Amino acid sequence: MNDNPRARAWLRLAAVYFAVGVTLGVVMGASGDHSLFPVHAHINLLGWVSMALFGLIGTAYPSVSVGRVACAQFWMHNVGVPVMLGALTLRLKGTEAAEPMIGVASIIVGLSALLFAWLVFTRIGGQSRSAQPAGQRRGAA
Ligand code: HEM
Ligand code: HEM
Image 1 (spheres, rainbow, N blue to C red):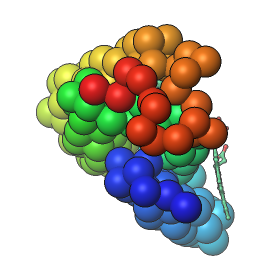
Image 2: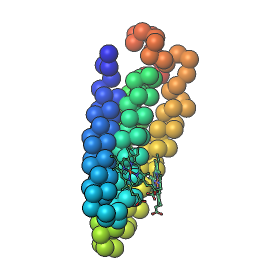
Image 3: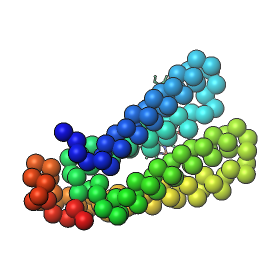
Image 4: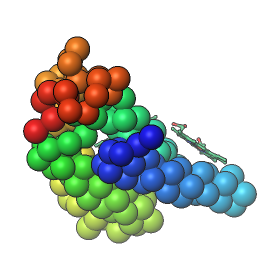
């Protein structure tokens, strides 16, 4: 059903983040050490939840997930999120030098969110629904 490679990539990445986020949640619960809870929360929310939504929205509205802006949004999110959460983990474990990296990576993730908002506003219209045959889709540049 899904011939949209970027939407499929989002859904697979979402599943990976879900597995990692839930595993960290179980480890936190079992160990009683909740110090990484902001990392767990954002693995689940910026990874599992946001990426699953990008994938589902890209499946329902393929024009949101194709083209150069969608490519930039994909890579900014996929570089920004792991760097931000890796640096946050180091920071929570005491490495203060990781703080600027959290800032830079969060800005990249924030910019990717702005690009996604732009895609939603400019690409989702009456003509771009997946119900329409692929050949007739507009705005899929
Ligand atoms: C088996 C699955 C999970 C386990 C065992 C688990 C466990 C935990 C634990 C132990 C905490 C720390 C609570 C605290 O110290 O205040 C936590 C916090 C949190 N978890 Fe999970 N979690 C799971 C799945 C999820 C999922 C799927 C999501 C989101 C989609 C999620 C979102 C959050 C959030 C947002 C927080 C922070 C809550 C706060 O601000 O206090 N968790 N979780
Ligand atoms: C660039 C993206 C993001 C940044 C920089 C960011 C930053 C933050 C910060 C600084 C906190 C407070 C942490 C604390 O006081 O310990 C926080 C908490 C929280 N954020 Fe985010 N956030 C981002 C994206 C998101 C998204 C997309 C969601 C939901 C879909 C989300 C949900 C939450 C929740 C539920 C909390 C409370 C749990 C916690 O403290 O970890 N955040 N976030």
